[in-house]
Image (tube, rainbow, N blue to C red; front, side, top):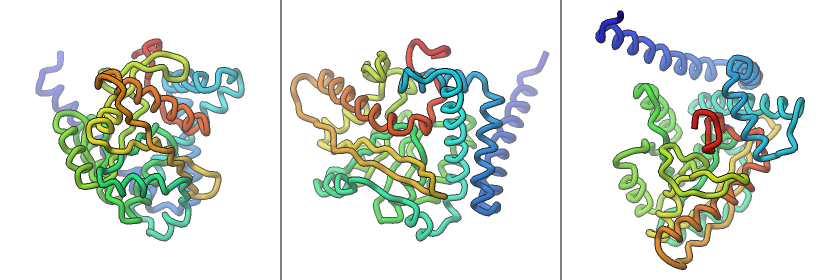
Length: 306
């Protein structure tokens, strides 16, 4: 039998190994020439697919929600593309701090950027409601390079050392990082009152305490934060999707019009209605490139392990 102290030491060793692996990967991504790093990402995607049958089964479920006609070889190809896309996300994120503003700007294009400037002109901040799609870190770095302060709310990863490392990575990109949990709401409101942009990943309800909606034809919950903040503070909520393009280091973002925050009844009913409208917007953004949707976790009550 393992003594408690021994178990704790073993756990700390495992945590250190996890953090060390990410640090090594980040260092390697920075040192390897860009085209080679890109090819490496493809290899990592193939390896991850082959060694992660549970994740493969989950992403196939989600892909079929987006496109019920996917079957057989087409489904397997789409699943592999999702793994490739996720590997590219990590490799590019690791390389971002070492890339110049010129390189980042050259390979980024944005559709409907005026929705952002129009929102900020109101002086109440702006919320980006994002799905786990494409290279959102690249888009965040590009925004900070343009002089727009960015605050990102992210899941508090385990072990804590790994979260701190990822937080430091995003800080290098010019972003302010807020972990989910106690104190997150106050920090988000402070950023919005300073007329800053707050990014909220909105296609997954981590603690399952959100608003019930229909999402890709099935009932589940999505976070209530974007709608609640938008209604209470008058802050514009913009659905935003960020995509990889075939071009080397290529990225493309779509900014959708702000969600309507019209009050029609009680707060609960209004939050539910706005969140349902957000779900439709997320569906639109994801359908443009479902193979770039990095949703490898259970996200509907019918999913195994939900």
